[in-house]
View 1 (cartoon, rainbow, N blue to C red):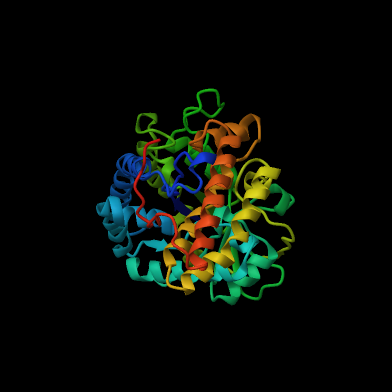
View 2: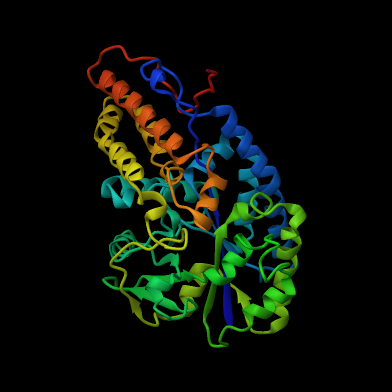
Length: 416
């Protein structure tokens, strides 16, 4: 039977407040507290709570045969804890069913593996402990931020004890091979790589409500028919997507919740599908062959590479400037001021450089949808102003001179 693996990514960043050049040195807060809380609560009411209720119903209806996986970034977990604890409790109820696997990632949804290995290891360790404490599971599957994978990343993940890695079934990687197989990665021993079948996943995540799409409207029975076209000996089919697809990106009135409610029935009716978590797929299947991934592959944009975050000079400059501050943030933490390191880590969230992307056409439309800024240049200027202010505060902290008003990790919004 072919295992259908639903993996849902749950993430919210801490978005920055408008921060002008003349705000540098004025002791102003970095993060837009009121806006971040409002966005989180809206997404929770539209997506997290109703979708979690639906999944609980499906697990009960099919007596545990419906199964899925989640990865929750540390930043979204913090927002749940601070602003809407019932949301976190609903995810814990899913964990208690035994039908849901919780994965590990970087705690702050960062690109740290590309810039600083020690910081990457710290964030992974932090997230492991968080998942264990909240969901009573020791994660064995790893998903890197934005599904960025490479030979080096896979080797490091295996050395940390993870048994499964998730990735994008990019055409550039597979070269006409099937994404519906269990792969290994060059340079690793036993690590198993499960890939996203983007054709099907994107039908749900991006095309579902597009009335100009030839497949519109996407119904559960016709989607199941399309999935049945994959070879019967295919061991797995990865449906990996942002959880916010349900109710936030695709609103409830599009029929997305009805689609998800009835899809399991139509797949079960085929007699050749089962639902499994990543670790269950890996336990049942051996590595078919090893893929060579010398350059990073991601799940973003048509290019499926790093250009969504590091594709233009603004993004590269911002990324480099951020990591130039890490040694000082670490030193400040060692000297009894850990709040600066936590602020730095919130700035390491990949969303901040994603907002600076200048791509056009379809990819650009996606970037604009997610961005709180009018232009990529606005995102860059705001971020760099914040970094300059942070650099000054770190210097003041390390010189033991009186710093400007120190923002806590629970900064409040300030008006201009």
